[in-house]
Length: 238
Figure 1 (cartoon, rainbow, N blue to C red):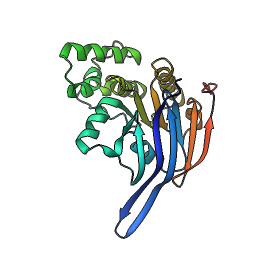
Figure 2: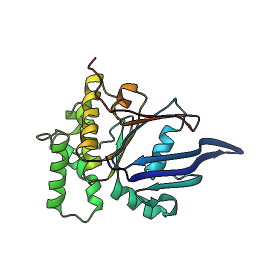
Figure 3: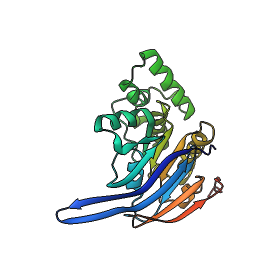
């Protein structure tokens, strides 16, 4: 794992405004994530985990402070620039997969590539590579309804990596899966982190999932309350 910093948050606060009320979500947060790190974000509901993930991914903007990802200060980008930046640099993995039912697995994976200048042949090559990495060779022409939940999540992960982003953000990626299937998805995330050197930031409520990360950050009421460096390991099968 490289020592270079991939993500830097400096005195970051995030507030939402409702009528005359100001609702603080993150409070003066400092955070540094190394290149190639696998970070798990934990904490009770409302602690700011998903907000922090969205700031790192460029889906939301800080009210105060700096969010710097891969040497880019996201606060300096226009809406058009940050949209392009996300497309080039971030892969998204969600709890609910977000696959399009009328598209095949290959077509779902190809979607991010349609925004690029790649030829059709090169797009298909990239899609085949992504599906092979996630273990879905031979399922290219299956529709989501023909796949299990775990296979659907693998398609979603293939879609996230098909553009070869350096950062993967995952919001409860195993939340809808049984324990065995969840373990398989976490195996895949560890593979992407270790073998393909992807920086991963994952929100999870599951302490067993967090054990797969190299570091766990605990939030409560928008503040960092515990930051644990750990040796990522595979929990014993239940």
